[in-house]
Image (cartoon, rainbow, N blue to C red; front, side, top):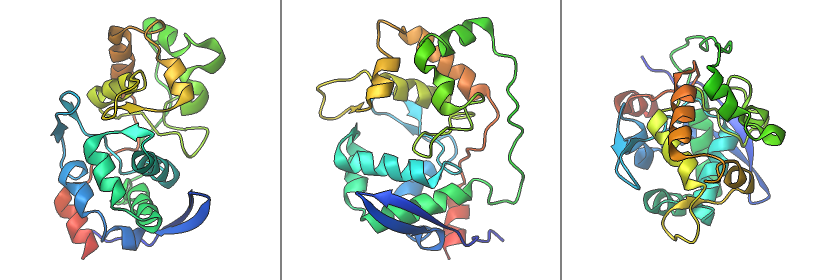
Length: 223
């Protein structure tokens, strides 16, 4: 039986300390599982890509992402509409739930020893020498230096590609992500789309802790 472990995570939302409870979060993910609870599910906006795996991300990151959608720093019609319905407590509970869901089957985290990086990919990772990708996301893209930074290892390549490009978008009320660091990192003058796709494919090939927990298991766990 898919048992729900008791977990709570303290996160900050709009300068308030809110304690997220995974057990409560399990009852609040109905609007999430329609996309994030289906293995291989694809979204069509702004182009066809698999929706990201979020089970196993840190609660702090999930909270930051949902808060950004709610506040408009991340622009996406569907996610904005969903985030707008959530209170700070809802966000904290959902974040706590998904953060502990990644290893819910009791398995150990996959090995995260960095594999040999192809020379062309290493050149992309270190292109911004003073602020390389691994400075924030970790040498294996699975050990971020801050809770608000996502784990990327093993994430869907097509999602990573779409996400990276979204940091370039400006003056669009429906699409884009406001992040000064990432905006500078992926400027078109620094990376072509082909290079971003190569980088996304490499990161996706790395072993990581992210997963999609099938919708039926989530519903069972919420009972």
